[in-house]
Image (cartoon, rainbow, N blue to C red):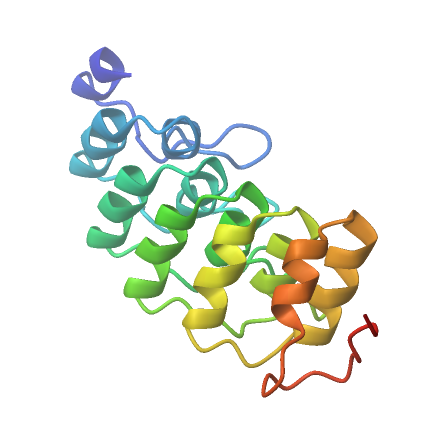
Length: 178
């Protein structure tokens, strides 16, 4: 990549799926390559045909350092892909709390919903990512508690389900009797 861009290759060139070189660099946590591409004009908010950004790829992979670099270079922390999924939702799927904190510090919308009405909390609960669930709850999450309880239960993540159903926490789900 370095030799090609030094000879004038476009750092925003897209393959048939619309992916640019920045996305695989971000998804593998190659902060050095991400920096190199950004320094040569790569678009921090470039999207493939599904609307996926490099920040979403870094978020799913749990690459907080790469995520911070992209955010410093103005990557949109609330960009949504074709399904309405945001980088915070990608982090919830991947399960890395440090990446989640990076996004929340950069003002990621903890209450964003995808096209199916799911929040990052739903994704974290469905995949058993307790540290991310706790992070999202501390960040002031107000949407998706009922759905997250259901996903946690279906996945067998009773610790998460019990943590979501507490006195004083708004939810329509009634906890089981002891």
